[in-house]
Structures are given as C-alpha cells and as structure tokens.
Image 1 (cartoon, rainbow, N blue to C red):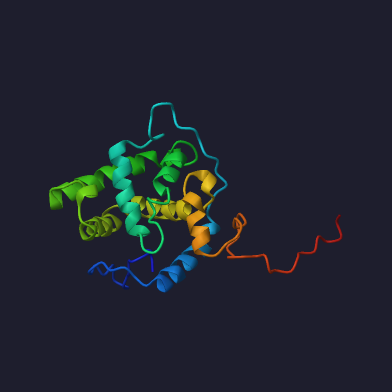
Image 2: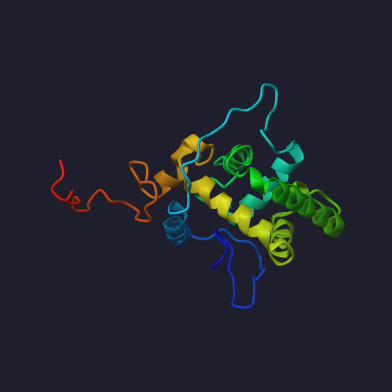
Length: 205
C-alpha cells in the first residue's frame, strides 16, 4: 500500500473506485502503520517566520490551494481532520522556505502541472473539482510526475505526524488520534516507549 487514508492499490496500480468513508477502526490502523515509517524520517527542522503581509513563505495562494487538494487525497477527512485541516500545507510551505529549498522548483512545476491537468480534463481548477476528479489527478500525477508525487506524499505524512511546532499536526491531532499523551521521541519508530525498560548507561553517571 503506497497511498494512505481511503486509497487502495493493486499490484498493477491504483484502483480508482467510488469514494467512501472507511470505518474509523481501519483508518486508525492504516495511520498507525504509516506513522511507524514517518517518525523515523521527520527531521528536526525549525520553523520560520512569515514575512509581514504575506500569507505564505514560498507558495502562492493558488499553489497552496492546489497543494491542499492533493494532500487531502493522501490523508482525507474522516473522524479526524484531513491533511490540510491539520496544517500540512503550512508545514510544507515553511520547510520550502528553509530546509526543503532545493525542492521548490519540483513543487512549483508539479503544482502547475496538477492545475493544468484539472483544467484540461475537467474545465475547472483542481480546488473546484469533485473529490473523484481530484483523485484522478493525483493518480495521474503518480504516473506522470512520480518525483513530485512521492515528495509531497512524504511531506504530507511528515506534516501530519510531526511536531506541531513545525507548522503541521495542528493541535497535535494525530497524536490524540493515536492515543499519545506525550510527543513521540525523535528518530524512533515505536509508538510509545513509556513502558520500555530503562537502558543501561554502561556504568556512566
């Protein structure tokens, strides 16, 4: 399974069928599984300040709206907020201004491509397309621009499960969803180490 949330995948590719909200039990299981891989890759990045008068650090308003639609195909809303509702676009925008600067051109071109595909296929902006149409664009992006697809998909996961101080995971929504009472340890894939036996310090004080 390469996608997340409602999406399913066969060995040959994605099965694009009617959208339906999955049972929360299944969603939680998938999100727990995804978090195990994400926590090991979330960098200890620091936030940056938005310039006065600007809504975004790097993204244009149109790019931000397009990105929100794509991110919500990775983590859609169900019993818990979607990626965009949890501040994932804000997280990505912050990191594009600093630690992910090298990815700026990939994002710009990929978001322009997504917007162009939506207008060409459906005659509307991606944000005005139906959820099913947005899914079709996301599936097409994975095939035609895999570099961008994998990049925003990974960053969506980082923003949703990382520390709220980096701009995403608003109100620690994913931690509450997973029943975590405290922030996950950096660089650890375990869900909760509070019950683990203390490590020996090798005799050092």
